[in-house]
Image (cartoon, rainbow, N blue to C red; front, side, top):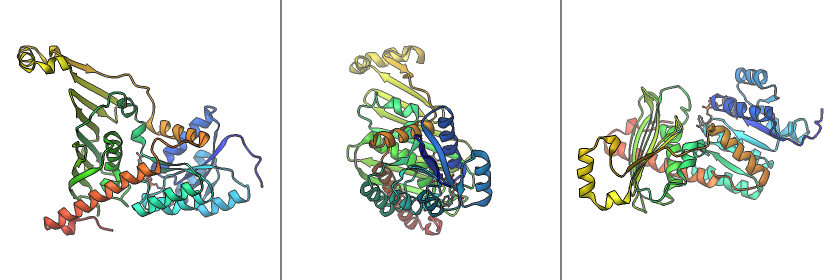
Length: 355
Ligand SMILES: NC(=O)c1ccc[n+]([C@@H]2O[C@H](COP(=O)([O-])OP(=O)(O)OC[C@H]3O[C@@H](n4cnc5c(N)ncnc54)[C@H](O)[C@@H]3O)[C@@H](O)[C@H]2O)c1
């Protein structure tokens, strides 16, 4: 059976697991709202998940990318863009045939399992003139988007990303699973190369590092501390940073941005400021402005997918490119090397990441 051609952009979702289902939900919502996009196909090798996906989304489900591309070549399905939501260890093997077949890709984070794989995907995308976006969705968090207008000279970052343990994403460690989000955000805000890093990490419940702490110094002089855990008793998603006269606090989960500003006048006369501060309550602190900048509300994943579809339509460079994905991955892998070296020095090598 051959399909009539549609003016709506056909999209494929590879991997109908926990996060792939979120991509499916967003594409279908956009389709239902009249956006010219159409959920055209799903690839899911797990029979139970494939059955559930077919039932829930009513799109044809294939057991492999190859099978799906064969059906496309026979004009049985029609898609020109795809989300890759498989386990990270499979991002490369799933993305390669799609890019080679001329499909634009949104690849979940981290972009691949190695820098070499990421580079091959970037090269393939360039060779076939394809869009390659990395799924660092926190860049589309309204609180992060609103940070752009207040950013001037960040000098110190403190990132906390803590999760309660669930037996998912265990093909990678906590640095590639969780910390990579904050690495990407800080790299995008600092725009400077790493000068040095110190890291410690331990496996707790899985065979890979489940909790990690890293201190990075950038060539600009900026310092960033990152803590990530997937064995916490609470969920925390916070990034705080300091720049001259300003403290900025982002709560990713609440999509909240708080800016505390010490006016230059108060700063220029520290003695008067300190005396006034001592006699005032926190609310009356002189020269202190607490601001919650206005932001456009929205679900980060939906904003990310809308942005991807716009890049596909206009053939423009994604906000989070393949190169950005590779930079965050490269830093994550450097951190893992530092964690392994630290474990060796501390006589804890048996606690390092296991295959
Ligand atoms: N951006 C985010 O905030 C975020 C959050 C969670 C997960 N993720 C990323 O999404 C990806 C998937 O994570 P998850 O938690 O959904 O994992 P998951 O294990 O729940 O789902 C992965 C799915 O891929 C399927 N799959 C395996 N091999 C495949 C193949 N060759 N082709 C197509 N599908 C295949 C599996 O059967 C499974 O259903 C990971 O890269 C993860 O890092 C991103």
